[in-house]
Amino acid sequence: MRDMLSSGAINDHTARALFTEITLTEALLQGRQERK
Image (cartoon, rainbow, N blue to C red; front, side, top):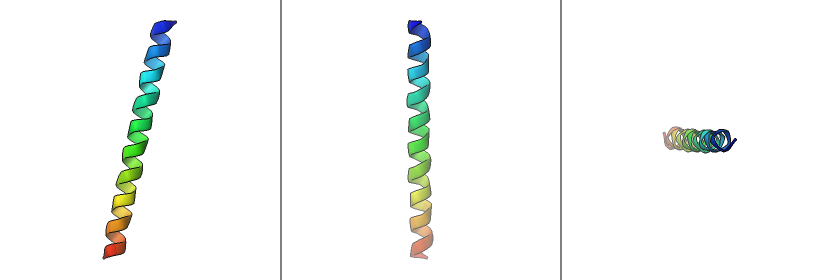
């Protein structure tokens, strides 16, 4: 059970990190388009 929980926590953390990076990237791209 502990292995399953730990792996699940790692997957959740990774998913959140990726989601954050994608959100920041989109924000930067939109900012660049507005500047043009």
